[in-house]
Length: 415
Image (cartoon, rainbow, N blue to C red):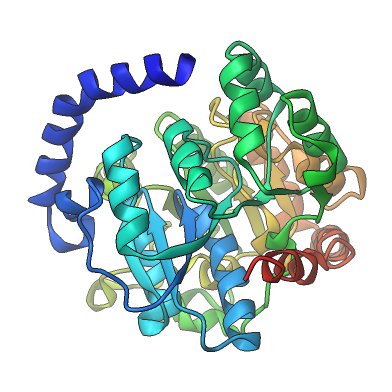
């Protein structure tokens, strides 16, 4: 019953969504979303496809690992990937190029999902993390297409929200063929929502199975090779001000210290650039090598897909989305590179990762710009302490690997 009510509300909201998608269809190429795809009007696939769905960058990263592994073992597979955001789309396209077909996420209306699944000739749907749409699950399952929830995470807060619509949540759990949970706690929360125990497998987190490319720090910004550099990555609105304030305090003690500031969303690049200017810092843009100079105080990371390279340039890494109530972001990349990690208190989206890093002295938690500046100062000055923390962080990641193999094996059972 709840699904019918949900669908009715979705139909009422459809005109507003259409206006939004129409607006996005006129955006510059890097942000453009073909409106027709949102309603399932996509090119027909000639043969059955494996449909991967990844919302944005985090889920797309996990999908890339899985798809690369699957294609290595099964090069004949026809894979279709949907993403909700342009940033996720760019990441998928850049990493997988012409080996997959990409479309934007079809909306959760009955006709749309029937049309989309028919046109791509789906024989398996793999959803990354926790993107549960009632009509998707209902109609895909009705066509007897297996549905695998891979790298599945469910925070306590999200679980409490799903419990408020328990009848709909239980129906969605019934539609799933397999849930590959990242840990026991997340798996238990899926069981509490009504998932049958035989459908649950604790696979671990595929994001830990990260391959570290051969990186040269000079590839990202060659002018700061001998400088003391820290990075604030994946920052959000309301957080950049605190980071710039912290950098000012760092500069009082280390006048030549450098900051790489990388906003989470590309649409904020200009805004953050203006904010840096307003705070009277000399700054450069990663995207504009013609104006690079060594004496700048801040480098704005205004390019996409280069975060690993940016981390390699820094001695200390602060992960954004944690000084404001976002929930934090994935710290696996700086940790696997052996960088000491700093985080704010809002880490509920990656609580187990940060708890492990902090417990093993691979990360520190701060809750203000003053604490952030002090932590950065201590690690920039005490090279041995920074090196020890970075090695501890790397050990945490390496000891947690192995999920990719388990996840691919589970998916292959449905191919």
